[in-house]
Image 1 (tube, helix red, strand yellow):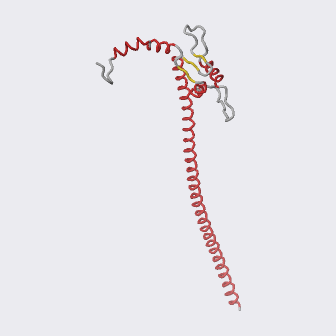
Image 2 (tube, rainbow, N blue to C red; image 1 turned 60 degrees about the horizontal axis):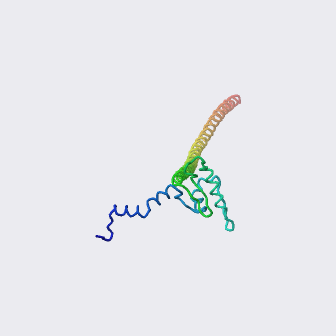
Image 3 (cartoon, rainbow, N blue to C red; image 1 turned 30 degrees about the vertical axis):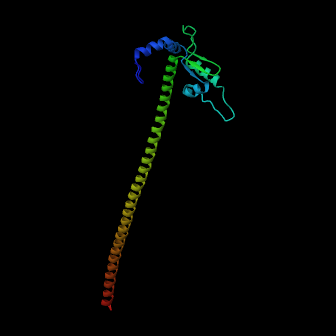
Length: 199
């Protein structure tokens, strides 16, 4: 009995064998199962290219030639391989075997990962430098304020010491002058009293 949406896996497998689909899938898998246009291929795997290709609105590079150079760099053709070359370039498409496709994808992953590590390192360096500059500016400002405070305290102390020294000098000079005046006065009084005593 045939019901919709019900499949008998043994019947399906037998039908696929009879139709030759399994053999076709096996042949395709053993052949060039990956097919891409040269532009699509190059843009997908450009991380493996040695230099960046500049494109302008009026100029399209030779994508086929770029793909050929890229493939010769990463997977040179081996004449000893019994299955033949792992890649070929036609007029409109680039053909790859499945094993080469997996290998190239792994290489792209590694190339992108290494570039990501570089970007992360640069970004972390930038962040650390920015934090360092901020901390340095803050430390310099704090140092300037502390130095200003210390200089202000020293200046006040010097002014107070100068005032105290001036007062001490004034008192000392005043005391000397007073003593000198008193001596002169006593001497004058003695002289006057002797002169009066003679008169």
